[in-house]
Structure formats: structure tokens, C-alpha cells
Image 1 (tube, rainbow, N blue to C red):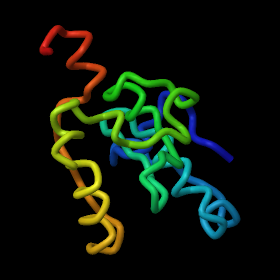
Image 2 (tube, rainbow, N blue to C red):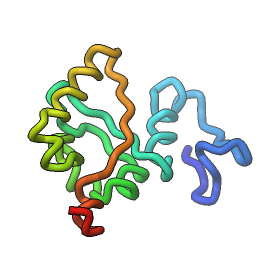
Image 3 (cartoon, helix red, strand yellow):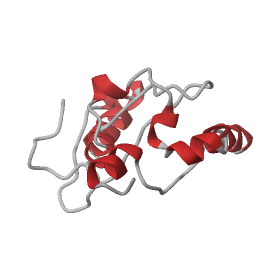
Image 4 (cartoon, one colour):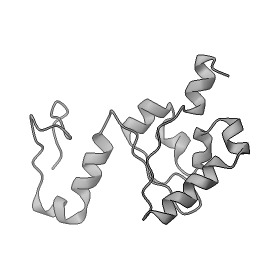
Length: 117
């Protein structure tokens, strides 16, 4: 079972009802994450390669799923941040904090297209 397109997955106005089977399989979590459009939610492997990609990531980062999956997340950093080793530092910080790392920053693709560098 999946939610209707006009229903808000993450909102409380119109909750999405899913089957017990979908809940127990982790499919409900996947359905929720895949349908979040306002936030980039993606997982990295231990080497920093992008393993999952949601619609919100596509909207905010400017890369389609097929462009992002398997690539290193350093593609989101500005060249000067890569030179300073910021991607490696952030990956190490995530490893120290049970794999969770939140970051707000300028996406390199967006910066290039807007003429910021």
C-alpha cells in the first residue's frame, strides 16, 4: 500500500496509513523518506559514497538520483573546502557520533549555477 500523491507523508493533516507488513519490513520508513520534498535526506557508506537519495535531495542539491548514487559526497563541497579536507573531517565526525551528521551549507552545483564562484 502506498499513500496518495495529494496526501502529506510527513505532515499531520492527512496521515498516511500503511499495512502492518509494510511497517515491519521497514518499507514505511523508506516510503516516508522517499517522499520528503523539503529536506535532503541521504545515506553515505563508510567511504562517503552516496547510498540513498530522496526527492528532497534532488530538489535542494540539484542532482538526479542516477547522478548522485555511488558518487562521493565531496561533490557537494566547494573546491576550497575539499582542499581543506572538510569532507573527510565531516565523515570522521559522523563516524564518531553513531553515523549522524547534519550539515547546512552551499551546494557546489548551486553555487556554480548561480555564479557565486
